[in-house]
Length: 424
Image (cartoon, rainbow, N blue to C red; front, side, top):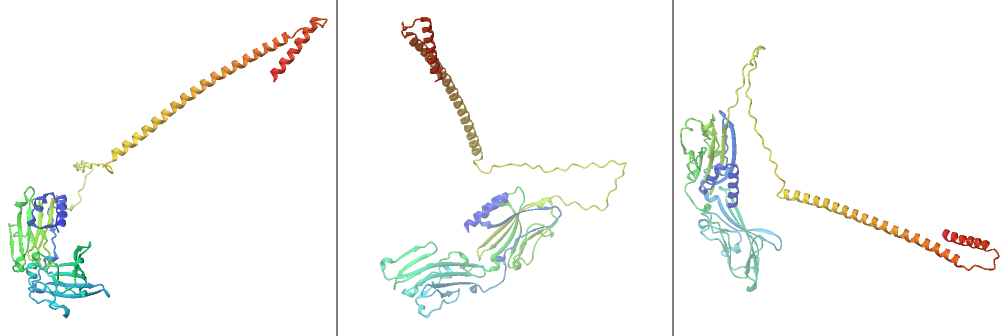
């Protein structure tokens, strides 16, 4: 209940900022509905406020409306449900199994203090099972159930009590006594005043700029038929609520002939003190401009008359705000930019390094080629000189009669050998 109240108060603050002061007070009740309504001036407004739990039936038999009963589910031999006992205010306890009479009971003051715990004396093996405590208040539409598992053991060392994640588990020694708890401390089970004085509905009005604690009371309604009007608005039939509100459960407020002074915060409060019901519905009413009346005759425009000037209607200014998809939008794009920059820098450095290496290799290749050419040409010269020296160093044969013919033949032989080596 506390969680639901907190959520509804948050919704009230979001949709109706003026309701913050009212939602802070617990005595005003739980906010179950918030709504913004805008209607043109002169029209009729209906602020809906329905609650089936506030229907007045004038049923005086309260004792038949409240009942508690215990059931047990046995797992062996087959799953079976057995009614243990039941009890209602002003009536004796009813035990369904004769074996359990005098052995199983409830406290006599259960409906006075809300303690509906089941007392089991002299526990036997057949008492094992899952017990359910069912609390019903038919008039207040309340239905509660509490489950407890009972296991029986023969060893005192195994006696314990624990929570299995869904229900409480009791491990009890055979032959001992046990109390299965089922406690409801809410005042729903206590007798109060007459119910026609316990059900109240009222409407409040908070004009703009007025604090919540200074809101105006419009009307009070009681289940007995009593009605209290505040101010002259209801006397003038400007505001009205259904006469049989508690019979139908309809507490809607009707406002006719809306005017700008009617705008503000309207709240419907429903209280059922006997059933513990406290609800509140909030409506913010805004009165707009009146609807334009339909023209009866079509005006004729003469050709010579200038066309009447029309005032330019103000068009609403729309401001488009583009929000990033998530908080890391800027960081993500910065990462893309840095990655692209690093990639480009790497490519430029690689190109520069490769270019320098190619230039260096080309220079070394040219120098080596020049050295090789020079060495090759020097060898040829040395060879020629050697060959010539070899040819020239051969001793001349003095046997030749004609030295000129001898020298010519020797030169011819040397030239032939030199040409052969060059071709090879």
